[in-house]
Image 1 (cartoon, one colour):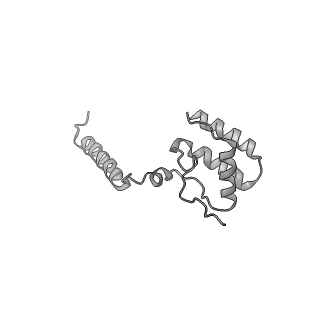
Image 2: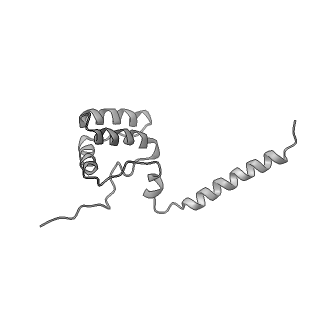
Image 3: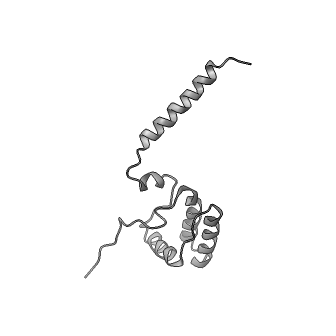
Length: 115
């Protein structure tokens, strides 16, 4: 009996905060290049994650992720993942809020008397 892969299951890699994405990008590239062992990649990745205050990953997590990378079932991590992972996040509303704040700052600077 064949089992379908759990494509909709989120892993620690999928749920990584933005602060950890650069470490995952390096790990992803090293896995694709096949120039380092998974143990070396894990040690370096965990060191980078610890530097930004994130918990370490396990070798089994990395091994499963590496298998998915080699099967081309995983794309390279990007900072935009944070928005993709949170279905309730309204990106347009957040961008609009930030643009309004920026426009208000510019208007205040334009109206402020020059010293």
